[in-house]
Image 1 (cartoon, rainbow, N blue to C red):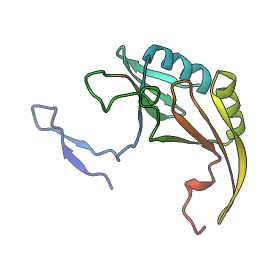
Image 2 (image 1 turned 180 degrees about the horizontal axis):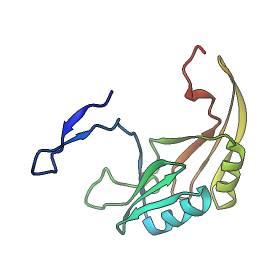
Image 3 (image 1 turned 60 degrees about the vertical axis):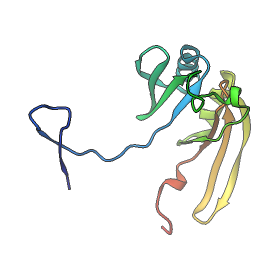
Image 4 (image 1 turned 135 degrees about the vertical axis):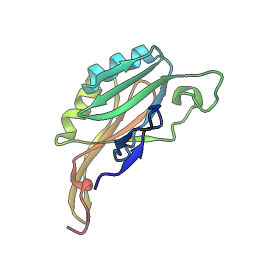
Length: 149
């Protein structure tokens, strides 16, 4: 079912097909250029756009965004400045071991990968902290389906 919405940006009031909502994250970093370069090298991210201090990236079609610290907005502080991070980025991949190994080889601090026994079977998951202080959990795709199966 496609919903028709009024296009508020079009002066004629044309309608457009509604897209489903997309959830993403914006990571606050000290140096956006360094972060863009690292995520491209370490995680294979593709740069969608870069406005200088704010950039859009994607990994296998999953978009995420970077924003340089904004000294005028205390909610836009990096984990390094705050001394903590309150978010964990979750990545689900067919081969979580290789994804983590690539990040660690590029300078991330890795956490061991383990097999977790869950109701639907085994979920393989580990993670790393990137050089900008963000925590990443990387696991297989087993949690992405409904349960019970």
